[in-house]
Image (cartoon, rainbow, N blue to C red):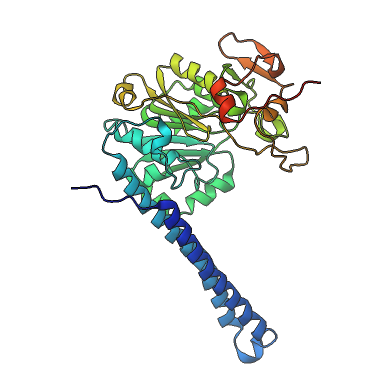
Length: 371
């Protein structure tokens, strides 16, 4: 019997979004017309309370529409999970990407790896998640019923998460804390996420390397760590440790943060993890603990690290400058990094070419003219 055709998810979602957008634009226009027509007559005609009530109910439609869209995305994500469950080999992790609640396709990668490790604990720790609306482990929590510790430095973000139905439906532990190398072990212990856990997901736009390096009380089966592809794939470097580091104060361009994928691969190897690959946008690196990697590695043809093509650089006033390729690196070349193998602090400008030939080709690399 032939396989059923796989739905064209992007086309389906585009059509749905267009339909919902048109519908709610019509509602908004209708509401504005009512307000204009009744302006100045609310009290005399007794319409004031009714109009306010109608406005409140229309406002709630935005929440209802968002929930409906999320439910549809969730169902489509479940379909993709079933499609990917057959255990066929893949070229690299980009083959199993799909996005429901993650930013760059991590939902699909995570579910594909987890499906091959059925005996690991169904618990996760994720920090640097803002309000957990767009996060690596949210789909996993809802789809597979995992329990997790969610940490962000903003109390307003955690308060927003606590108000969502997902809290009572899935029981995540939402904690406000600015994660550092000094406090991460205490946080994990305090909230009951020491010992063996299923996933550790790190995305703090800064000290990611140093925090992972210091974790000693938890033993995750899978580690997902944000990398900074601007730093390249050749040199194992990270920003120097500063417990108060914030990305846009480190450098206004936003390109100076985190660690290179080579640095993360070195750290993973030292901590007993096998590098599995990155997502196709060059944002997150995926690792599986060495004693479990045999269930995953034979199915991955190439453990590929992808470069980033993002052009999200900013000027000193916060406006996007759209730097690309080597220009992103050159904007921060005067800044220091630590070689995690030698322990030496050097300037980025002192390093040789940061990008491998494969990355140069992928970024349509063009060496800049030298003065």
